[in-house]
Length: 319
Image 1 (cartoon, rainbow, N blue to C red):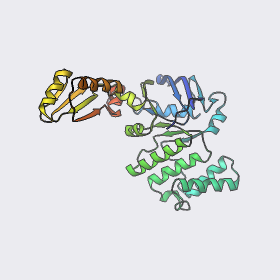
Image 2 (tube, rainbow, N blue to C red):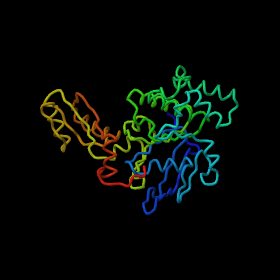
Image 3 (cartoon, one colour):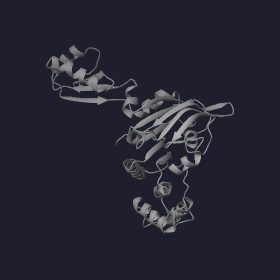
Image 4 (cartoon, rainbow, N blue to C red):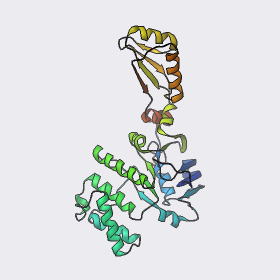
């Protein structure tokens, strides 16, 4: 996946939003390069959906400067709307209409000519594997089909930036993976995806960069691997062919955890290339042979829990 160095797709500085006395967003800064997937994580009530609503012109910020697709959010909201698409938590599909009729309705809203609208609808039905179901009422669709149609409707206007607010909630694993593949294809075409999700594996799988929102602030940002390395618990597991190799490594490495039965050592490490090269160098200097080496780092679940505090604490639900 190629990250461009040109104008960012989204740039927000000092974003702030309150509801009464409750601060939902507290001077949030975001920078999303074009043609990437940016994932915003946070517990329920952390302000993820509020962020999406502000960036997509559906709600006003109390303070902050925002540029979306090169347009100032406050001064050029119509230009922002023309450049974006939004797929929210709840489907916008009209279940009384067929899949094709839903797409044609969106084509009309985008002021496409009749022939162009029909061509665009047929193209999207094919792309989302909905051609056979296109003339059937959407009420007959499965949850995964309905979600694909929802995203297809978002694409009628060929948006540069798409906001996906928990797009795979409630989908079965197969439908979720189908949606992941669609997202990858969109990014390969140059579309920027701003993704919120409750599935940390989804962010790990898709996102070029991840920001963690807690208490109205971005408490961490980076690639999935960078975030994982911030959390203690990473280690390298070394397995040896015989006890002599194990004992020799133990003498060189010092403070490690020994598993005598498995002929293995667990060496604390952040999993970085530099740390791994240093470890291998120390063993190589003493001509110690390692039968098997594996790197273990905390997953995004560990990162999320460490950065967002006690998940049982009561929060005001603002999504």
